[in-house]
Amino acid sequence: MPDQPQTNPAPKPGTVVPWEQKIKELPPMTGREDLVKQQWETYDAWAYTYIWHLVVSF
Image (cartoon, rainbow, N blue to C red; front, side, top):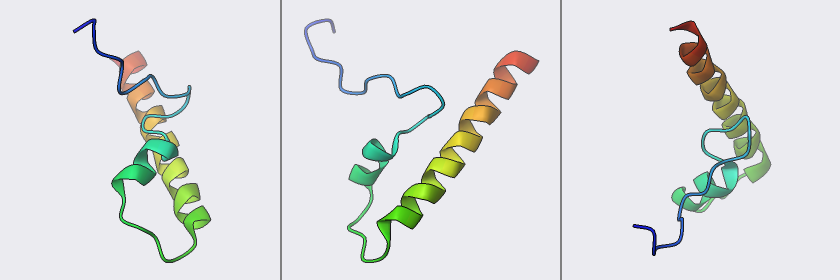
């Protein structure tokens, strides 16, 4: 529907789901958020690479 604002803008290059979006889905953290963010960004980069591998390989 063209009248509605875009609720899920395109992520930055190299990411599938940005940390800023993912943190909204998670429960409040009691530990070190920077460690969770680092791991999320690592896994997200792997997912991005995997998706592009599928795109260019087939």
